[in-house]
Length: 322
Image (cartoon, rainbow, N blue to C red; front, side):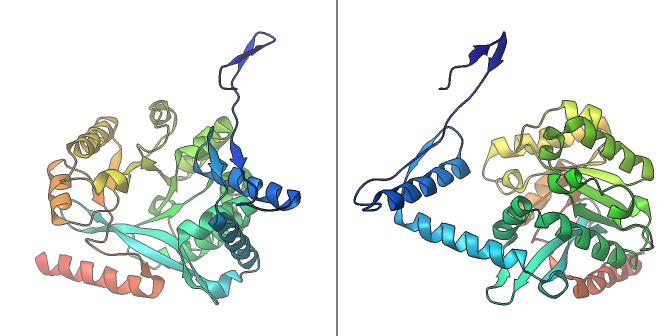
């Protein structure tokens, strides 16, 4: 099924994923066997397109667990169960505080703290992420309005929020928060540009006209079309942690980091390296003149109530050095 087809003069590319189950290892009756094969197909689609998976006993358990998590997420009370956490963004050369990235955390009453890697994909699929995203925006903007005016708030925005069409205007929760537009930065991934690119590009340009900053997250891990850098008025490129964590161990990763920083410098776009955890990484990024850093070397994401103490500590240190 892989070779392209010619239909009415147009080339069409199709493919297939396959899930398979065997009697009696998977199941003993037809209905159960089909269910097992379907679970294997679901896993094949999750892992990669154009592949196959045999049914394994653990697949049913994982699917049941995922379904249970989805039900709990649908019924979750946002104000009671979700928390806003913030991770500092640090200027590489000076060590000064640049701002914070707002991050969503779920304190499930039964499970405890649920990893974003587990619940964010489900929230995207179910549409819950739009509601959660609006809550994060409102909460984060109110919080950031209390910070010094030279600090930036960075908030992730998903394709779901673009599809809902509420990003411009009230959806940004700027009105009434007291936060200046230039203090707000939204982070998008390339998937936003791949889906309904002309519409989403227009939204991004509207946001820029308001003074909002735009950052491209996970740069280098997706399609990374350089044409996006011409079309979208980005303020910042975020270098994915998968490259940063290999600095000191993999020369190729450092070469990629160097290339992204050089690209950003030549285009007048700031660069931020995610996942900095060691002094070796810090020194290498300073030598390459990377603009900003995030990572456990400086601070993990902290609860909203701890942000004020971090700001106080950095500004106290700045005043002492001055």
